[in-house]
Each structure stands twice: as C-alpha cells, then as structure tokens.
Length: 117
Length: 223
Image (cartoon, rainbow over all chains, first blue to last red):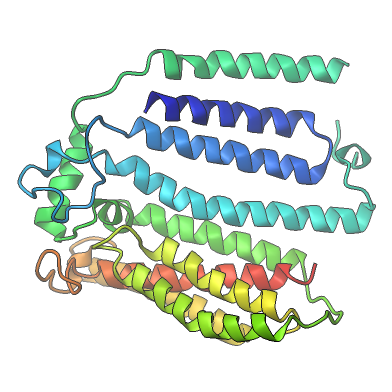
C-alpha cells in the first residue's frame, strides 16, 4: 500500500500546484478537488495493515480474533464523512464562482482585486 | 515571473515537509490500542457488525453531528448565493422520461436499503443519502423545468436533524451519555434490528444528507 500513499502524495501536490498556478476560477476549484482526493487516499493508506480485511465483522472474520484480522477502522470513518463534506464544499465554491462571474464578468482571478493586499 | 518563483518555492517547501511521511513510513503489525478497543467494543458493547459505523455513529458521534452541521451550512450558503432562476428549457425525449420515472423508485429504495443496513454491511447514512440525491439528479436531468417541493425537503431535513439531537439528549436524560445507542435494547449481533439506536441515527443522517444534497442540486440546476 506504499503505492497508494505515494499516489495520494502526488495528487495532493498536483492539486496544490494547480490551485497556486492557475488563474481560472473553475480550475482552482478543480485543483482543490484533486488535493482533497489526495488527502483521502493518504489517510486511508495510513490505516492499512498488511494481509487484513475490511473492518466489517461478518462471516469472513472470526469474531473472537477480529482484532488480528481487520484494518484500522478510524481512518475509514474519517474519510467517509470527509468525502461528503468535500462534495458540499466544492458545490459551495462553485456557487461562489457563479456569483463572482455574474458581478465581475470574468473567470480570471486577476480581475478581482478588491481583497488583494 | 516573481509569482512563479514563489509558487515553485512553496511546492519545494511542501515536498520537504511531506516527504518524511513516505520515507519514514512503517507498517504497523498490530492495531493501535484505541482501534483494538473500538473493534472489541463494537462486538461486545454495541453489537454492531460494521466497526466503521460504530466509530462514526457512537464513538465519534459528536464529530458526525458537527459534520452534518457543516453540510447544512454549505447547503444554506449555496441556497443564499444562488436564488431562483427563470427560463424554460427544452424537454427531454420520451425514452429518457419513461426510463427515469421507472428507475427513480428503485434508486430511492436502494438508497434506503444502504442506510438502514449501515450497521451490517458497507454503507450508511452518508452513502445512502448521496444515492437518494442521484435519483433526484436523474429526475432533474430528465425535466429541467420540474418543480421540487421545497417544503417537503425542509421538513425532512429539519425533523431528521432535530430527532438526531433528540436521541442524543434522551441518552443524557437516562444518564448513559450523549448519543449512546443503548437507549433501546441492543438486540442480537448481526441482525437488522440490532446495535440499539445506531440504525435509527444512521437513517436520520441518511434522510438529512439526501434532502440537503437534493436541495443543492435543485438550486444549482438553474445556472
């Protein structure tokens, strides 16, 4: 699972680079989405243990020995809610973009200088 | 030019900060003490098959309440920013309309199945809610001019949120702790009616997430 960790790491860096270097508002949101996915993959990969199965104690896992047969349930639980929250936050950012374009008539972030220092 | 250099410097800095995460990464052979406690506790104290669900709904129930609140705030923000939009659009074909009205019920049923079985199988309130929202997305794609009754959505959302907090407060009144699922009998391990209040709480979360995401889709389609 070290590959998953590297993949998440690469996605995170690509996403942050996209957010910093792109001027198009929609592309910045896409960069955020990619970084978000990268973070999810990193968290899940950190909770992985070798040769173990999902933390669902059905017939595939003996209940008595469950502690030695399942992966860490906490990272999965964290990522599960984070995915839905990420979806809602992305939607909120896109609606910000829609409002900005309506007011300023441009998708480029350089046109919006009100909050620039 | 100077901007590009700053971006590059930030990326190099981030890489330097994050690189030890990979280079020093070691597989642990055993679960941490906390995780083992959750796994054994899920069987013995909560009688819930899905450990992830026990963590989300019970052990970190307050977190989940917070996450649902964040979701609500995001939905409220979108509704505030994007108001009502007018403008008629062309209707879709007969084929798409017939198929989507046929699939609609099945998809909602599947969503309900996912969140009522959250303590037994991979699934739960968040996933089931998203599946229910996809049913409404299909409906909106079929007929863009269709009206979705906002009163029903708001009532579903408000009541599921209120009941969620209410279940937590019942636990406080009985003095067994906020959001403790043992307010109703735990039942038998591995059955649909087991794990106390966990299926009820997760169903409420599912209804709330479904109503909120449908609301988001409905507000955004006018754009």
